[in-house]
Image 1 (tube, rainbow, N blue to C red):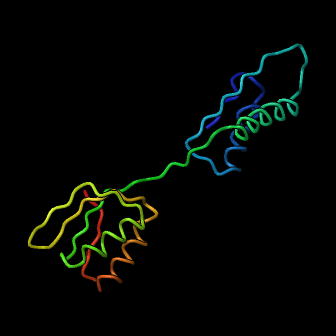
Image 2 (cartoon, rainbow, N blue to C red):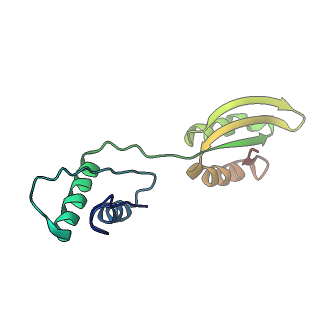
Length: 137
């Protein structure tokens, strides 16, 4: 969403929103404050002023990528422990807990969303389908 806050319609918020969309940014807020110095810029000048100021802010900002983490459960036979732990390390999974039951070893994990399917595939190959990984509730 955008707001022109008293400027002519579409001359302030819209160019800043268009800039965010062109850079495929989400979850970002840009605020530009313009102090009137006696010179009337016109709609075109306002668009350039607000869009340009927002662009400079985005160019000079420090960025951190948001990564979605998932909670998962993994069940595997005891004899697959070494293989499972190697794969968990490879994909940067964080082990929250590990227990043992009649089903084998049971691990509660945190895992990035982008790693879920590749890890699932590699686990299936390495365990011949015996290790199971699914999202926790």
